[in-house]
Length: 123
Image (tube, rainbow, N blue to C red; front, top):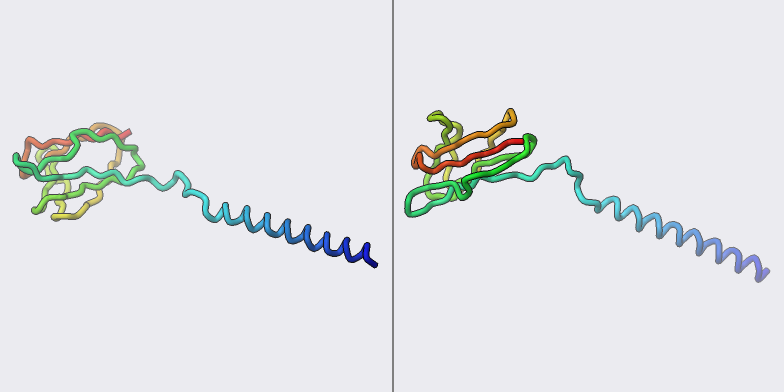
């Protein structure tokens, strides 16, 4: 009788341990890091200086699948151009997405300050 009771308690204990291990391992799967499919958003910041609005960085390299945005941190709307053509107009304190359709090198400027240039290399 005592032997059966010990075996029963041992069996229940083993089942509880296995259940705890299963729940513990499942919780790690639920909290796993996101896959590399989601891309980081790259920003081309437009900032104010004494010389006028400029791009915070003059060169950026992005992957073809990356999300890209022009971000305007100035007090006025900014028009981004390329070869004299308007690409996007970014409202003040806002971001506007832009999609690169092919790999290559792209040069952007600001309509309000044509000396402000940004070269984006898309790989």
